[in-house]
Image (tube, rainbow, N blue to C red; front, side):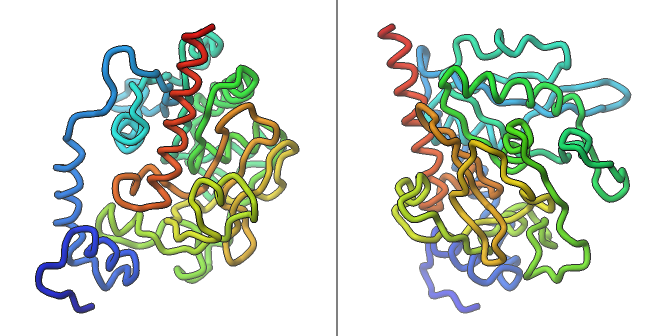
Amino acid sequence: MALRLGTNVRELKAAIHQFGSAADAVAYGLQQWRHSASRRQWQARSGSPQVGILSDSMVARGEQLASVALICVKAVGLVAGAVPRILPVAPEADVDAYLDGLDGLFVGGGQTNVHPSRYGRIADEARDGPFDEFRDEVALRLIPRALARGIPALFICRGIQELNVAFGGTLAKEPDDLPEDKRHGTPEADNEDARYRLRQKVTLRKGGVLQDICGADSITVNSLHSFLIADLAPGLVAEAVAEDGSIEAVSVEGASDFAVGTLFHPDYWASSDHASARILTAFGDAVRRHAKAQGAA
């Protein structure tokens, strides 16, 4: 890879996206730039819309914790311009109380998979895990209730898997022996920017929600998911497909406002990638519409 003198950060990132591992040597510096840039003031202020972010559960030193990736928090605060509210995945949670006062719902990715028993399959812990059944329990109750209320929602990676399962769909794990250039799962990488690099072309449904948002017929996205949509749930519409025909994004048919799920992560590159930014901005616009309508009610 050759870079001209004076190449800016955006151009360097584009080179990483194009050349992948050949550009990993500069990824660490770009990561530091992104972390520095992300410390700028959030757009959200007192009285701004509230977006709930569903947590994961984890155990640290024997203590059960609720955790949220800062990628999700920053995407909501910096790009969508809303105040993040963490929704802990306590199995006994009152999901209707969680939704009260929310103007948006963000169900992001995680380090675990939906337990296959949730969609009628037998689980193989070694092959299909790890699992987070606390999150399964809360997510599968929360998602239908949020959409029934007309709350704008964005579902990313594990989130779209939960959306599909909540509506009656199923998932399937891709074969373990696929070569990396054919695999949807997380690529080998030395750092996060390289792991999340934009490496997979997806085609957007003509006249669909994502085509309208992104203003393109196809986009290049990252890919870190080994579980794919097998049976698409009733009520969901495929909005993007990969070159192998697998579904990469959906919308909720008949939703009153923004209700989109992506297997890829637009939250990671939302500050620099056009399509990612458009998706998060469209979500933020819907959140503000909802807040305005609620205020006028």
